[in-house]
Amino acid sequence: MAATKKTSGEYKPRLQQDYEDRIRKILAEKLGLKNVHEIPQLTKIVLNMGVGESTQDSRKAQTAADDLSLIAGQRAVVTRAKKSIATFKVRENMPLGCKVTLRKKRMYDFLDRLINIALPRVRDFRGLSPRSFDGKGNYALGLKEHVVFPEINYDRIDKALGMDIVICTNAKTDDEARALLKEMNLPLRER
Image (cartoon, rainbow, N blue to C red; front, side, top):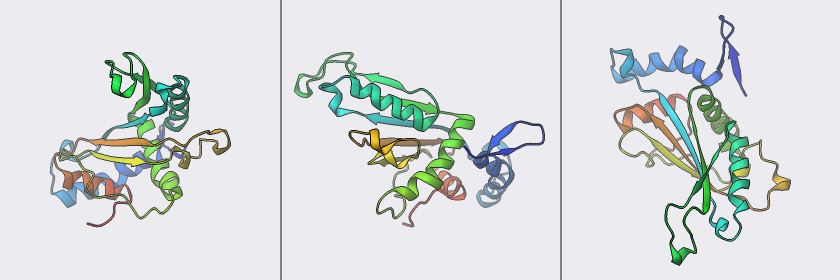
């Protein structure tokens, strides 16, 4: 985990330090914001893995949760079905996937590893879609394989699973969120 040392002895992730020292000033100038509380910032990152095969083998969801815990650095929660759906062979309370919500230091550490380590390892990567904003300043992306993270041992994986990543910001518009993520070096393609 990349961290820089503060003068007070407290460690801060490299991306968080960069946000506080450089990015915040650039965004205030670019967006013409006077109040420091109006400057967009990250609030949380939500990671989600759906495991369709868990209807046959309930241990697959727990295996996915263990992998997601390694990736996030925080324990993942197994998600369960709320109601039965006979068409999909799903019964109530059956494990279907896992999720984890990252905030503060772990959020910045994860985003730094995503941008600098995981995304460059994706096959045929040409940048992230600029259309994945939700209209309220949040950005969602999906990975087809979770093995792009170095924490996952490729030899012990029986099947590569996909994962969803949602980056939540307090930006009021998509343009503000786009400016924030571009300054954090998220590789967004040009429209």
